[in-house]
Length: 285
Image (cartoon, rainbow, N blue to C red; front, side):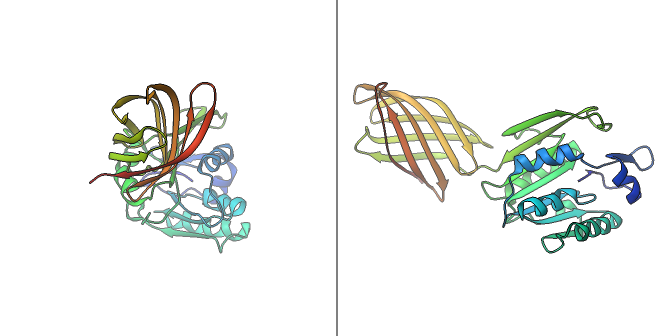
């Protein structure tokens, strides 16, 4: 994986393999992610056999190749430099994963991301920002995006790992950050849930920006306190406290958001004991 720039020139393959970074003409960086960073990126991305991974600005192909070798993921690396693409193909052959990997000369803004499970990248900050609409628009809920060093601007990350690297001489010197985003489902709107065994009809009003939720909840005529809300891909969790039929409860709603429905369960505690019941909710028109 490399730090991508449109006018980038190719450095010799021997130089690429010998060090973790190099310069073309002193102005535009060509940067290979160190092995420790690759390890953390794959740790956060959690690829698995059958997943489709795309590395945007794939450089010498190491992310795609490692994902294929270690996890059996099918990978595509795209780069604008023909010589880097040829180097990646040769590296894949040497690693014995050419059947799981593909490398193409391609503009990353023209890369089709539909159906992709994992996107990895080491791009300039302004390129990341330009990619946000495409990532949100084409990737399905649950897809993972992992970026080295640079975030996605207004889209808050789900996880971040920071590590010290003596060999890091480009970007934030001596340190790398690895960011993870999980593409969120659309949970916006008013949701109705009928639970006759626990408060009757529940109503949830959900506002959403990226994966960040602002939730109001009612159980029958009672306003409830939403103490926490999390959306990670299709998985939604709501920690809610309040009076149900005149008695105080702590509850944890957990379910999956798909096609205007939520299905999961509710864990209910009155302080002395707890029980779990099914939870189903339907989004209102």
